[in-house]
Length: 206
Image (cartoon, rainbow, N blue to C red):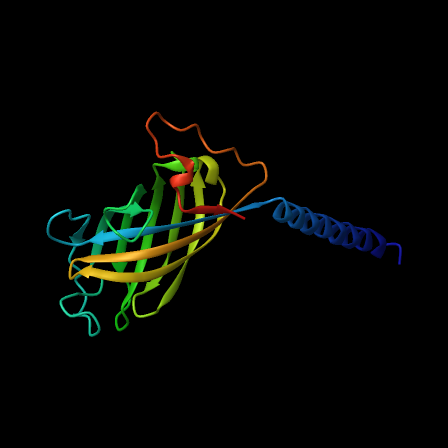
């Protein structure tokens, strides 16, 4: 009986520590702030104003759902982000990264990119986005996995929709970003001279 006491005390202490950690995590979650941003991404794979360039021709088999494409095709992007769905709309930043054709049979891309904000209240901050883009789905959900500036240690998700095909080479995507940042995250960095005014951004703080 006496020999079992240290073990009982240890288990009780462990349970208490786990409960405290869970409570602390819940408190941190309650102290987080959700930031909602909406913008349009212009992926232009050819012609004037090209922003997406294929850098790897996949060695895999021809893709049954995407004629002319192969498993493993990889494209690097520096896509414009705008306030509205027109390329002539107010610029808000760039989406810089890459996507890879990652399914043998479905039209699925693996996306890894950084949203670089260049206007408004979050000018100079970035958001890291990673996930699975099933082109055939009307709405796709990707993950927010971090960021810098006002989005340091951010978590959350992106609702990703195809708004329209401007042309064969120009796809317009609508992105709704929901990023939760810890309560102690730094405020937005100071705006540089000539930056877009805050009211010009299509964003909402929830």
